[in-house]
Length: 204
Image (cartoon, rainbow, N blue to C red; front, side):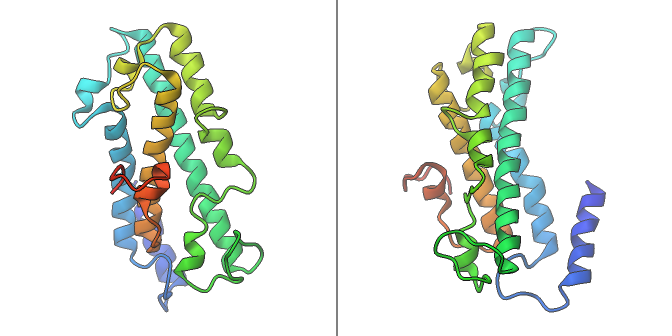
């Protein structure tokens, strides 16, 4: 963790003698967000007191393995979002490619906004789609097929229906991804709308 924090500061010192008018700006804030939001996602899944939501593997091996698999897939989904955003931002700033509606090379925050959720190679869909992606397949293999009660395994979603839980996992991940990218890159997109397509106070 300390090495990653130092790398952020070193990158700014090396390449940002003149701060950009849009995009990332303050390395200390970036590090704070990068450390806080992944933990917040875990709390979304298992509750404010994770000791109450997470089971002991030796006591409940099936549920424990299910939770481990769910956690892995959710963070893999998050990584897919972050990697696709970074690829979109780099290509757009270099004037090589752009999401629909963006200016090349990127000229401001409105262009960066369009990178949120941009998925030209379907990497996000493969990892995150609640019907066809790895999140849904993971639930089927490691939880449902093992007879695990999803209400106990993923208390943050509060459902026994695998499709509902998969949709919930995707929504929770999209919310946290949006919050990370919004706060790091000074985006103007609404995370409340981005997480589930509706303005309903599901992601502040």
